[in-house]
Length: 111
Length: 113
Image (cartoon, rainbow over all chains, first blue to last red):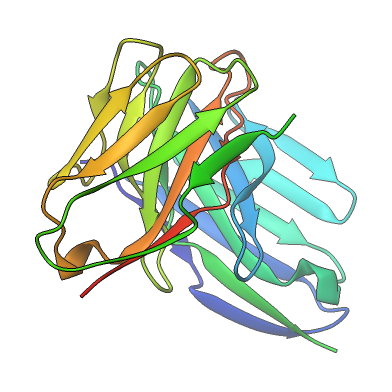
């Protein structure tokens, strides 16, 4: 079945450093989403990417969808303590309404 | 506008007991989902409902049943709870249109002893 892997599993950074998490799917995706989950909270939608090679920015966050639509990345520039949480990608394959979530990357930001 | 609500927030069951987790959304969304999240893990899809009247299995459906009671409500039933079902359960909904943004409920923390 479809699998979605994320690396790294954990990342500790000093405040102000950059952070990147990578997402890889075993199958070609129709679109990919990114979510953030704060400790003890529920996942909150960040963005959806649909087109091959698509790049979207939200302030300090940059999202990319690979050319083959099998991988994606999230890059945070100059991390802040408010960026703490776990970041998940979720991929959807064509012809289905279901999303398969990645394993997540837990980010800790040291002040 | 409450978004997605889930009841109960916490539950402790003994092995073999049954229970139903309730989920409701007030956003007129077509699609609804049930996920489980084990400690330090990602979310795994249990069942989903693309629209009222339809349900489909996700990655880990064994030991669960669902009912899409109407467009607003999607319940998850554990017929005979097992310790392996100890987890946090999240319900989510999506409009099912161009951007399939999923809105999550606050979760139900279930412990099976």
